[in-house]
Length: 251
Image (cartoon, rainbow, N blue to C red; front, side):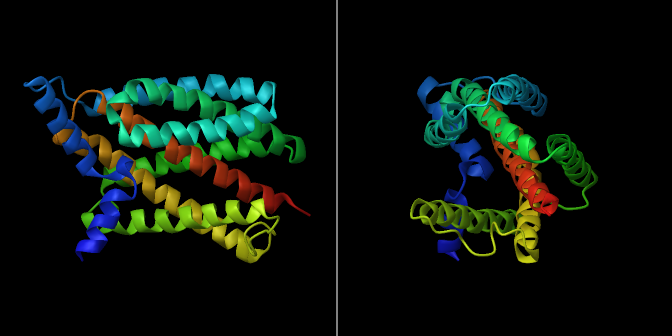
Protein backbone atom coordinates (compact mmCIF):
# COMPACT_ATOMS: atom_id res chain seq x y z
CA UNK A 1 0.00 0.00 0.00
CA UNK A 2 2.83 2.41 0.83
CA UNK A 3 4.43 1.75 -2.57
CA UNK A 4 1.14 2.48 -4.32
CA UNK A 5 0.77 5.73 -2.39
CA UNK A 6 4.29 6.84 -3.30
CA UNK A 7 3.61 6.05 -6.95
CA UNK A 8 0.39 8.04 -7.15
CA UNK A 9 1.86 10.96 -5.25
CA UNK A 10 4.85 11.30 -7.55
CA UNK A 11 3.44 10.39 -10.97
CA UNK A 12 2.20 13.86 -11.84
CA UNK A 13 2.68 16.83 -9.48
CA UNK A 14 0.00 18.69 -11.42
CA UNK A 15 -2.56 16.30 -9.94
CA UNK A 16 -1.58 16.04 -6.29
CA UNK A 17 -2.71 18.06 -3.31
CA UNK A 18 0.77 17.46 -1.89
CA UNK A 19 2.27 19.81 -4.48
CA UNK A 20 0.06 22.66 -3.27
CA UNK A 21 0.74 22.01 0.39
CA UNK A 22 4.49 21.75 -0.26
CA UNK A 23 4.49 25.07 -2.13
CA UNK A 24 2.67 26.74 0.76
CA UNK A 25 5.13 25.41 3.33
CA UNK A 26 8.22 26.33 1.28
CA UNK A 27 7.07 29.91 0.72
CA UNK A 28 6.12 30.30 4.38
CA UNK A 29 9.51 29.07 5.54
CA UNK A 30 11.46 31.21 3.10
CA UNK A 31 9.54 34.43 3.68
CA UNK A 32 8.57 33.96 7.29
CA UNK A 33 4.97 34.97 6.64
CA UNK A 34 2.13 33.63 4.59
CA UNK A 35 1.97 35.40 1.21
CA UNK A 36 -1.18 35.99 -0.81
CA UNK A 37 -2.88 32.67 -1.43
CA UNK A 38 -4.44 31.26 -4.56
CA UNK A 39 -8.17 31.39 -5.19
CA UNK A 40 -10.40 29.42 -7.53
CA UNK A 41 -11.33 32.60 -9.41
CA UNK A 42 -7.67 33.52 -9.72
CA UNK A 43 -6.88 30.13 -11.25
CA UNK A 44 -9.80 30.52 -13.66
CA UNK A 45 -8.53 33.96 -14.72
CA UNK A 46 -5.04 32.56 -15.30
CA UNK A 47 -6.58 29.78 -17.39
CA UNK A 48 -8.24 32.34 -19.68
CA UNK A 49 -4.92 34.15 -20.09
CA UNK A 50 -3.09 30.95 -20.99
CA UNK A 51 -5.74 29.87 -23.47
CA UNK A 52 -5.62 33.32 -25.05
CA UNK A 53 -1.89 32.90 -25.59
CA UNK A 54 -2.44 29.35 -26.87
CA UNK A 55 -5.07 30.51 -29.35
CA UNK A 56 -2.87 33.28 -30.78
CA UNK A 57 0.13 30.96 -31.12
CA UNK A 58 -2.04 28.19 -32.60
CA UNK A 59 -3.45 30.61 -35.18
CA UNK A 60 0.11 31.52 -36.19
CA UNK A 61 1.15 27.87 -36.34
CA UNK A 62 -1.91 27.01 -38.42
CA UNK A 63 -1.42 29.90 -40.85
CA UNK A 64 2.31 29.24 -41.24
CA UNK A 65 2.84 25.52 -40.53
CA UNK A 66 6.47 24.68 -40.07
CA UNK A 67 8.36 21.57 -38.94
CA UNK A 68 10.21 23.82 -36.50
CA UNK A 69 6.93 24.78 -34.84
CA UNK A 70 5.82 21.15 -34.81
CA UNK A 71 8.97 19.57 -33.39
CA UNK A 72 10.27 22.56 -31.44
CA UNK A 73 6.88 23.24 -29.88
CA UNK A 74 6.44 19.64 -28.76
CA UNK A 75 9.94 19.21 -27.34
CA UNK A 76 10.10 22.71 -25.90
CA UNK A 77 6.71 22.31 -24.27
CA UNK A 78 7.74 19.01 -22.71
CA UNK A 79 10.92 20.56 -21.29
CA UNK A 80 8.95 23.47 -19.82
CA UNK A 81 6.52 21.05 -18.17
CA UNK A 82 9.36 19.09 -16.57
CA UNK A 83 10.98 22.31 -15.36
CA UNK A 84 7.71 23.50 -13.84
CA UNK A 85 7.15 20.20 -12.08
CA UNK A 86 10.39 20.65 -10.16
CA UNK A 87 10.35 24.46 -9.88
CA UNK A 88 6.69 25.27 -9.26
CA UNK A 89 7.47 28.85 -8.20
CA UNK A 90 8.48 29.54 -11.81
CA UNK A 91 4.94 28.79 -13.04
CA UNK A 92 4.04 32.49 -13.63
CA UNK A 93 6.83 32.52 -16.25
CA UNK A 94 6.84 28.95 -17.54
CA UNK A 95 3.07 28.61 -17.93
CA UNK A 96 2.77 31.38 -20.59
CA UNK A 97 5.88 30.01 -22.34
CA UNK A 98 4.30 26.56 -22.40
CA UNK A 99 1.06 27.99 -23.79
CA UNK A 100 2.96 29.71 -26.63
CA UNK A 101 5.04 26.65 -27.49
CA UNK A 102 2.10 24.29 -27.34
CA UNK A 103 0.06 26.68 -29.44
CA UNK A 104 2.65 26.59 -32.21
CA UNK A 105 2.73 22.81 -31.97
CA UNK A 106 -1.02 22.15 -32.12
CA UNK A 107 -1.47 24.88 -34.74
CA UNK A 108 1.02 23.22 -37.08
CA UNK A 109 -0.32 19.76 -36.26
CA UNK A 110 -3.85 20.94 -36.96
CA UNK A 111 -2.72 22.33 -40.34
CA UNK A 112 -1.38 18.90 -41.28
CA UNK A 113 -4.65 17.20 -40.34
CA UNK A 114 -6.72 19.91 -42.04
CA UNK A 115 -4.88 19.39 -45.32
CA UNK A 116 -5.80 15.72 -45.28
CA UNK A 117 -9.30 15.79 -43.75
CA UNK A 118 -11.74 18.57 -44.58
CA UNK A 119 -13.57 20.04 -41.59
CA UNK A 120 -11.73 17.95 -39.02
CA UNK A 121 -10.40 20.91 -37.01
CA UNK A 122 -13.84 22.40 -36.40
CA UNK A 123 -15.13 19.00 -35.31
CA UNK A 124 -12.17 18.43 -32.97
CA UNK A 125 -12.44 21.86 -31.34
CA UNK A 126 -16.20 21.52 -30.94
CA UNK A 127 -15.94 18.06 -29.37
CA UNK A 128 -13.13 19.18 -27.05
CA UNK A 129 -15.16 22.16 -25.79
CA UNK A 130 -18.29 20.02 -25.45
CA UNK A 131 -16.45 17.44 -23.36
CA UNK A 132 -14.86 20.19 -21.24
CA UNK A 133 -18.23 21.70 -20.33
CA UNK A 134 -19.80 18.28 -19.86
CA UNK A 135 -17.10 17.25 -17.38
CA UNK A 136 -17.37 20.63 -15.63
CA UNK A 137 -21.11 20.03 -15.21
CA UNK A 138 -20.47 16.50 -13.93
CA UNK A 139 -17.95 17.87 -11.41
CA UNK A 140 -20.14 20.74 -10.21
CA UNK A 141 -23.21 18.52 -9.96
CA UNK A 142 -21.27 15.97 -7.92
CA UNK A 143 -22.21 13.16 -10.31
CA UNK A 144 -18.63 11.91 -10.04
CA UNK A 145 -16.85 12.79 -6.82
CA UNK A 146 -13.07 13.16 -6.82
CA UNK A 147 -12.15 10.91 -3.92
CA UNK A 148 -8.65 9.68 -3.08
CA UNK A 149 -9.46 6.31 -4.66
CA UNK A 150 -10.78 7.97 -7.80
CA UNK A 151 -7.69 10.17 -8.01
CA UNK A 152 -5.42 7.14 -7.58
CA UNK A 153 -7.23 5.22 -10.32
CA UNK A 154 -7.11 8.07 -12.83
CA UNK A 155 -3.43 8.80 -12.20
CA UNK A 156 -2.54 5.13 -12.64
CA UNK A 157 -4.50 5.08 -15.91
CA UNK A 158 -2.66 8.19 -17.10
CA UNK A 159 0.63 6.53 -16.17
CA UNK A 160 -0.30 3.52 -18.30
CA UNK A 161 -1.16 5.75 -21.27
CA UNK A 162 2.12 7.63 -20.84
CA UNK A 163 4.04 4.34 -20.98
CA UNK A 164 2.23 3.42 -24.21
CA UNK A 165 3.08 6.83 -25.72
CA UNK A 166 6.75 6.53 -24.75
CA UNK A 167 6.95 2.97 -26.08
CA UNK A 168 5.39 4.12 -29.34
CA UNK A 169 7.98 6.91 -29.68
CA UNK A 170 10.91 4.59 -28.94
CA UNK A 171 9.69 1.97 -31.41
CA UNK A 172 9.09 4.69 -33.99
CA UNK A 173 12.77 5.64 -33.81
CA UNK A 174 13.54 2.15 -35.11
CA UNK A 175 10.87 2.26 -37.78
CA UNK A 176 8.52 0.00 -35.86
CA UNK A 177 4.84 0.85 -35.56
CA UNK A 178 2.91 -0.38 -32.54
CA UNK A 179 0.20 -2.80 -33.64
CA UNK A 180 -3.46 -1.76 -33.16
CA UNK A 181 -2.50 1.86 -32.38
CA UNK A 182 -2.45 3.59 -35.77
CA UNK A 183 -4.01 1.16 -38.25
CA UNK A 184 -7.49 2.68 -37.97
CA UNK A 185 -9.15 -0.63 -37.17
CA UNK A 186 -11.78 -1.24 -34.52
CA UNK A 187 -9.15 -1.98 -31.89
CA UNK A 188 -7.32 1.30 -32.64
CA UNK A 189 -10.58 3.22 -32.44
CA UNK A 190 -11.43 1.48 -29.17
CA UNK A 191 -8.03 2.33 -27.68
CA UNK A 192 -8.43 5.95 -28.73
CA UNK A 193 -11.89 6.12 -27.12
CA UNK A 194 -10.47 4.71 -23.87
CA UNK A 195 -7.67 7.31 -23.89
CA UNK A 196 -10.20 10.09 -24.52
CA UNK A 197 -12.24 8.77 -21.59
CA UNK A 198 -9.18 8.87 -19.33
CA UNK A 199 -8.39 12.43 -20.46
CA UNK A 200 -11.96 13.47 -19.65
CA UNK A 201 -11.70 11.96 -16.17
CA UNK A 202 -8.42 13.75 -15.62
CA UNK A 203 -10.28 17.03 -16.21
CA UNK A 204 -12.16 16.30 -12.99
CA UNK A 205 -8.82 16.16 -11.19
CA UNK A 206 -7.83 19.50 -12.71
CA UNK A 207 -11.08 21.11 -11.55
CA UNK A 208 -10.59 19.62 -8.09
CA UNK A 209 -7.03 20.94 -7.96
CA UNK A 210 -8.36 24.50 -8.23
CA UNK A 211 -10.40 23.96 -5.08
CA UNK A 212 -7.82 21.86 -3.24
CA UNK A 213 -5.14 24.47 -3.83
CA UNK A 214 -7.37 27.20 -2.45
CA UNK A 215 -8.30 25.08 0.58
CA UNK A 216 -4.64 24.26 1.24
CA UNK A 217 -3.75 27.96 1.26
CA UNK A 218 -1.28 27.49 -1.59
CA UNK A 219 0.67 30.61 -2.64
CA UNK A 220 -0.75 32.77 -5.40
CA UNK A 221 1.70 31.54 -8.05
CA UNK A 222 0.01 28.14 -7.86
CA UNK A 223 -2.88 29.65 -9.81
CA UNK A 224 -0.58 29.56 -12.84
CA UNK A 225 0.47 26.02 -11.95
CA UNK A 226 -3.16 24.89 -11.76
CA UNK A 227 -4.11 26.64 -14.99
CA UNK A 228 -1.14 25.00 -16.74
CA UNK A 229 -2.29 21.59 -15.52
CA UNK A 230 -5.73 22.17 -17.03
CA UNK A 231 -4.17 23.27 -20.32
CA UNK A 232 -2.00 20.15 -20.49
CA UNK A 233 -5.08 17.95 -20.16
CA UNK A 234 -7.10 19.88 -22.75
CA UNK A 235 -4.27 19.84 -25.30
CA UNK A 236 -3.95 16.09 -24.77
CA UNK A 237 -7.72 15.66 -25.18
CA UNK A 238 -7.81 17.75 -28.36
CA UNK A 239 -4.95 15.88 -30.00
CA UNK A 240 -6.46 12.49 -29.16
CA UNK A 241 -9.84 13.57 -30.55
CA UNK A 242 -8.06 14.78 -33.68
CA UNK A 243 -6.40 11.38 -34.05
CA UNK A 244 -9.71 9.56 -33.55
CA UNK A 245 -11.53 11.70 -36.11
CA UNK A 246 -8.72 11.09 -38.60
CA UNK A 247 -9.11 7.33 -38.17
CA UNK A 248 -12.88 7.57 -38.56
CA UNK A 249 -12.46 9.68 -41.73
CA UNK A 250 -10.32 7.12 -43.52
CA UNK A 251 -11.88 5.26 -46.40
